[in-house]
Length: 298
Image (cartoon, rainbow, N blue to C red; front, side, top):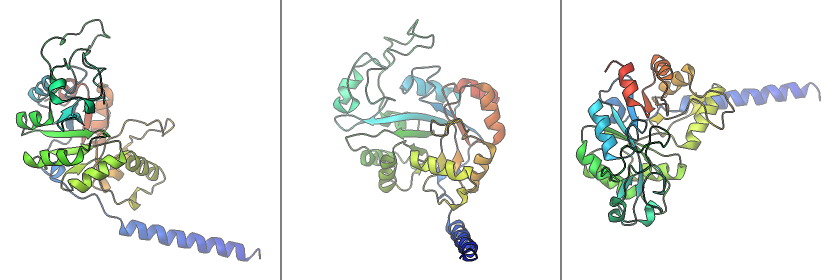
């Protein structure tokens, strides 16, 4: 019996290795999308909410300032109103950033447009509110497509009760923005539904997809993954990584081997920006696009 145990173990090990090799050989890289294959800088400056560290985030004012600065990508958060219009705001409620209250999904566009979208924005810890009362309103996604048809967009869709995927895809197609939009979401269900609705548009990995790639990468098994996404947008470390960095040079190399772009967030430290640029990241999501533009000499 004792002699049989090593044979059984070796047999199981051999079977596992064969299975692993089969998974690696059958895996495929991420499908290419024009968002990344079209000409772009080596490291793109991605203005988080238009540059929330410098201007009131997710407002037309911020996006205009970021575009004038020369950033490569405008990053934003999308919600849908009670009357089916896609608007831009980080939170599901208007309470934190405006002079109003309530869920975006419970308000009409007309009601949202009456709010001061810069009411609570401050860059000095709440001592002053420099853009309060300056006529900064909640923007619609359609307004941005009309204003910046030449720009790339990273648009995070939030989990909503009112369905957002279909009208969102229709809007992208209406303005022929399929090659200029990357869609992100932390919610697995939301991103899966969007991919089914709009398969031609590039997407980033949702929470489960990111977690799987990170964990398998730590044990050198990222090669078995056939990614359904074109980018991974990750922080330096996550609450699930127990202090172990997600962002490493090996992580970037393994992602690139799968045709996956790496775009860390939210990076506002100039030294960390320089480090990531030297590692070859594809873009950096930052509240301080002004600092990153200086670092890149642009």
